[in-house]
Every structure is written in structure tokens, then in C-alpha cells.
Image (cartoon, helix red, strand yellow):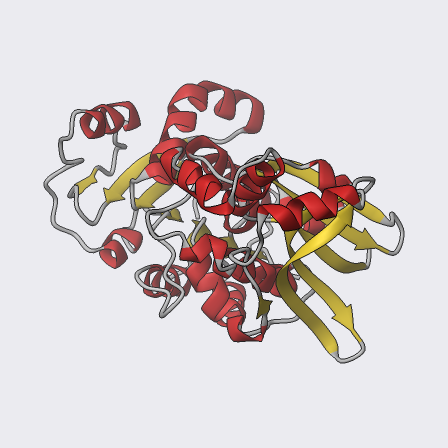
Length: 352
């Protein structure tokens, strides 16, 4: 990576998250250079359905965003994601492709190729982290590259940065929290008198839940985040099928009301905790007392509580989804890479 010059960015994917990051970069370009010493050029944008654009001198992100808003392709270049990642001008690859928990593609092959060539990768894609974190971690180390994925757990709310940087020196013994905004929104509406089906329908209408909500309501999204927390924060890789998983489909309004009478709230909690045999991870609805910090977290908001040896419980609350919210996670990782490069630290992986 070139030091004391602009960093070449390669966007692989330009959907909601990629556009969210682009909007931040357009709006804050001058501030990023003056305050953070971060200068960049966008050398490639490659999409699955909107074409690709290339420029060694730098593409205009404002123009690309305008094209997308008009329904136009980003460009007419013919280049694969891996080819774009390996361009001589590329320094940081931004993997904002959709999460695929079956085989991790296309993000996994892209990340392998980029790290293998010494390019750094910043990602919001949970697939490669879930399926191959140990391998990618070693590849980054061997090639002197950086691999960071803050956006994979709580969007722009800095959960991994908090655990691995701000809590450095602490022994984190357990992490638990609300990491799926869809289910938290549904449970919050049920507290307000909605039946499960009605709350789910409203979540879909507002865009919090997909037409097929199984990934959220059956606990899969929260489970992969618990898996990532186990590996990245507690340093203990687990396969996804080792995460015990129960969704919220069996929770009724009567259950929510009964918990309220007992002075508690039902939340879908993801948890990773150290045990005598290693680490256990789970996702399940749980009743928590109103005095607990997580009990007050409503709507689509996310929160995590880190239980440590020196600080006891530390809770962080913030947005867990959104275009610019996730774009902020990518930006913070890029700034960390740029700072590490300036100080000569070639290797960085967001894992414990």
C-alpha cells in the first residue's frame, strides 16, 4: 500500500451499503483529508447488475450515485470482481456483496484473492467471516495485509472496535445482546398490544423484515453474529451449526404480557460466553428484568453487553442496520487501516 498518497478504493457491490459509504465519502472528503489524513481515489466500482466503472485517476462517486438514482448503469466496463481487486491501483477492497452463509460467495473468493495479493479488505459481509475467518486471518498475516469487518455485527455501532481496541487488556468473558433489529422491533410492537403476525407484517411494510423473514425471526442472522463474536472477541472459532438457535416464532402477545407482569421483557438474545471447555454460543428469546440495560432497548435498535474482569459490564447501544450506518463501519475500518499504514503496522485483523 502506498503511504503518504491517496489510497485506491475498489467497491465490489454498489447497493445500499456501498451507496451509503459513497454518500459519506462525498460529503466528508475534505474533512477526512484534513482531520484524519485520509485521501482516497475510487479506482473501480463493480456490480452484479449495473455494470462496472474504472479509472486509475479516480471516479466521481457523486456522479455514480446520480447515475444509480436515474436507473442508469454505473459503467460499461467488463471486469470481474477479482480482476478489479487485483488492479495495480487498488489498495483497499470494499466487499459490500450480499451475505451468503452457504459457501460465502462471491465475497469469499474475492477476499482470498485480495488478501493473497497483499491488498487490504474491509467488509460488511458476514459470509467469509462465518465460514473462513481463521484462514483469512492467517492469509492477511502472511501477506502483510489488513482484514477488518466491523460492519458484520452491529452495522456502524462499534462493537468489535470496542471489544478489541477500547477494551484492550480486559478479559472479556461473555458477550450478549440484541443484534437483530427486525425481531426487536416485532417484540417491541407486541409489548404495545400487537399480535405476532400483525407486528411482523408491519415490520415488512417498514422494510425491517424481508418478504421471507425466516433469516431474522428464526434466529439465523443473530446466530451468525453470535458465531462471529465468539471467534472475533473471545478468540474461539465455532461452526454456525454449533450455535444453539431458537427464534421468536413461538412467542405470543400473551407471553409478552405475562413477562411484563413479572417485571420483565422478552428479548431475542445472542450470546457467546467462555466455559470450562472453551466457548458456547446461542440465540434464544429470554426474559430479562427491566433493570437490565438491554431491557430498555426498543424498536430496531441493537445493543451488546460485554462482561469483563476489570470493568464488569459495559453496554453499547446503537443502530444495527442502515445504508450510512453500515457505511460508517466501513469508513472507520478504512481510517484504522490508513492510520496503521502511517505508523508502519502492516498487519491488522479484527479478531481476538
